[in-house]
Length: 229
Ligand code: URA
View 1 (tube, rainbow, N blue to C red):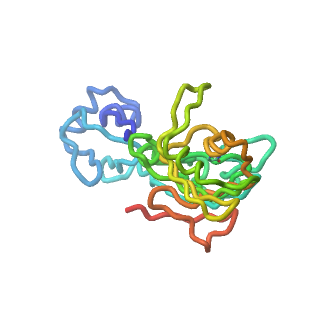
View 2 (view 1 turned 60 degrees about the horizontal axis):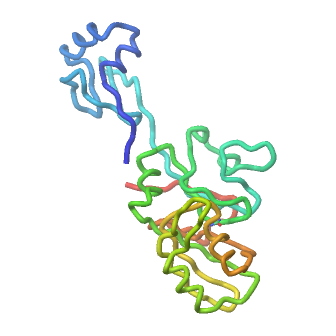
View 3 (view 1 turned 90 degrees about the vertical axis):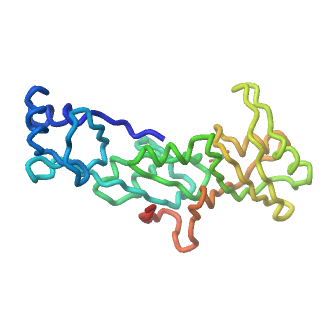
């Protein structure tokens, strides 16, 4: 997890357009406060969500935003696109340009997409080391068999990237529908895994990422703010 940091003296020097030597005096005079604590060291680290005040006046305050969105089929997981509507186009908030997507879905996949301007949070959710579970409902063209369960659990080797997929849980719901849980997100991973069985995916829907579950009340195209405190 990393939110890039920088020094407070550099920030104040840029803000006031003065030399760092002059900032040292300002800091010695205890005129700078970060997150309600008076700054005593010129090399104190700050990040983009630090609340910074100078002489009692706030000069930086950026709010972290966390959203969950129900992506409809046909909407692209990108910030801009010439051809398709994007997930950002579905958001009606002044801060929408600051947001990035936490784990993309394909154009023809529906379901849960998380968005934020907090890279620490998104990196924690997408880092393969953390093995955050992603839950999918899959509808297939051909009948499922118990062999799928073992193949998904064993992992599959993909020569193009020279990778073996992490153990995945597949539960057969009925002849043509499965629930799949992945802890990673390789390119077209689910479609390619079923592709091993020459079984085309007809529909793919993500219902959950870690502890965040798409509620039935959130309809395709709708989003809501998350309280992650
Ligand atoms: N696997 C896929 O093939 N597509 C997605 O959108 C997500 C997982």
